[in-house]
Length: 205
Image 1 (cartoon, rainbow, N blue to C red):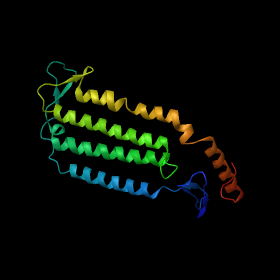
Image 2: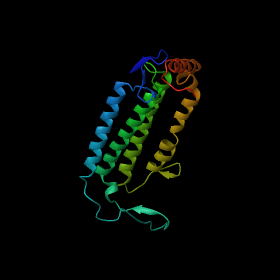
Image 3: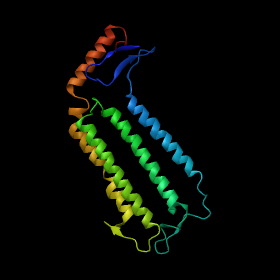
Image 4: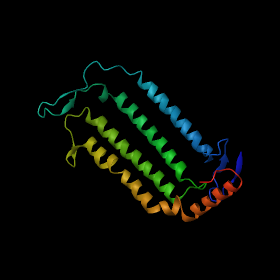
């Protein structure tokens, strides 16, 4: 049963179920996006089952550094495996982006924080693309390029994939109080709780 539309949260309806638990309805577009991305993820992962099984070990001891393992050029270096893995990674990033967008979205046009975070996910996808392309070239290359003391694919992982999430941390630290949960939002939420208690929707405490 819909109790009322919350004025401070125009994209959502407040519901009360049989257990008197209040929750917020998810935007329909988000449901469609999550279902679509999940379906594509299942298709891609199912396609990976069609790849040939490994017929040899995929790693061996490094001839110069015994504590390291070296790729033997097994299935992990095959183009089909690399690009299926790339597709899975992009789809997982898409699911993450939609889930974050659900939490940040307060208006039809979004907020400055949500737009910046979505741009950030786009940048993260570009870094992942760079990592995949350099790794695909690395597996068949005679000369391995280095950057910052690491092979180029590893450098993409460490300096890109590993450090880039700090951008999201900075955005949340700078904009959370202004665009996610403001003082006005908290006050409005308390008003809704009190009104729901008066109507018997929530137990005190």
